[in-house]
Image 1 (cartoon, rainbow, N blue to C red):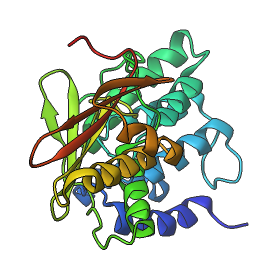
Image 2: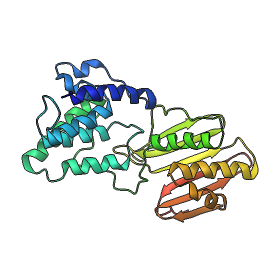
Image 3: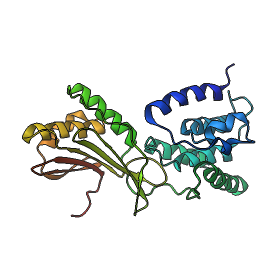
Image 4: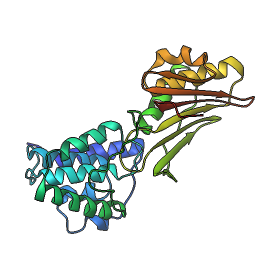
Length: 267
């Protein structure tokens, strides 16, 4: 039987090359078992795999079932500030920690704080502090990749590069940006956890209806909703479609289409 942690190391290396991974000193993994080195070095795929191993204790060499550590590693992943975190990661954390009481709950919270500080150099919010505000389900990275696919379909040669480090915002949130030749994707998410507080497509490379049509096509693709592109071209201002509040603004120089969770914010 293959050692699952070794398989995950290979997959993680490939994903880091595609989406970028935060780098951390190898010294943080010193004196730790080999199967923890990737997770302690900041590889969030390894962190998820380790949490799965602790949840079941199956098919993971040298790892015994420990629900408190499964919960803790899910929380460490949420504290990563990574653009690949989605609402599904918040749900996985809640499921891993569900039912822990007494000593097990205390162990999980202490381990999450200790491991978060070792890995990221900062404490996690602790005590299951998942985002309480409405969020759009995908990650910032998923939206970026969907826009790039749509650009190919539109026979547009631009591709949005990988996000750099997030910019902290004053309201306990993070902001990412990716731009390529007068096309920008801006996204915001929670300081702890996954999902999006919103994203915006800003296009200034073409003029008039063609510019708005492409911006609408890209914005719809960001939520895997290509059928909404035509609807978005007909909007000036705000419109609600299900759980999404769309905001379309135009100037002489640019078209910006923003997706936010409902309800639409007050003007």
